[in-house]
Image 1 (tube, one colour):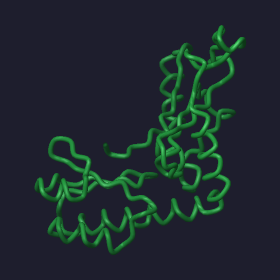
Image 2 (cartoon, one colour; image 1 turned 60 degrees about the vertical axis):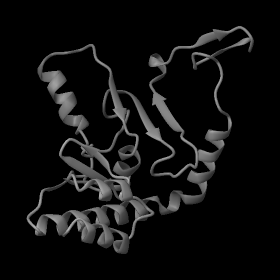
Image 3 (cartoon, helix red, strand yellow; image 1 turned 180 degrees about the vertical axis):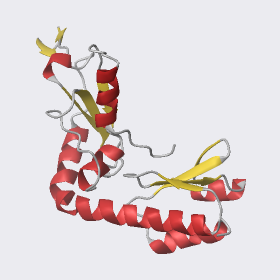
Image 4 (cartoon, rainbow, N blue to C red; image 1 turned 90 degrees about the horizontal axis):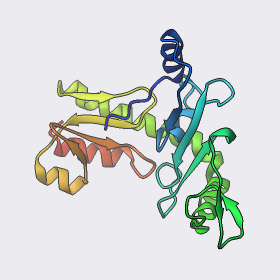
Length: 195
């Protein structure tokens, strides 16, 4: 809800301090997994540097696949294979079946836009900081975590919530600034929020 990003180096340090040797670190990088590599101050998510067991990234979020999809990377020793009788082979999915179209869509999106990703990430972050600053300047509650494009603010009236399709939880709402946002759109929302 807040777009928080955990520092893997600190997680590993705590595990080491507590002398915990049996663990599995899964990085839920649904959206942030595509942002972190392009943000200079962020801790890179290297399998070679940290004992990460697996990481998942969504293809339909930052990359923009028109259908929900994602990628899971895991250390080889963490992956199980199953004998799939009707295929006559082993497979790493439980049912031995998966959508073949989504990896192609994801691959195509990456091939066509990978040279734009850094600029898009930095622009989304710049706009998110702009939005956050405007709310903070008005002395209203606002939160933005480092390495995130999610801006948290006070939950608005129901009609604003619905019009903007805001994700809300309790007394807070958030907007995730993405490539389809621009300053004019954010100004319109700020105006409706009374900022």
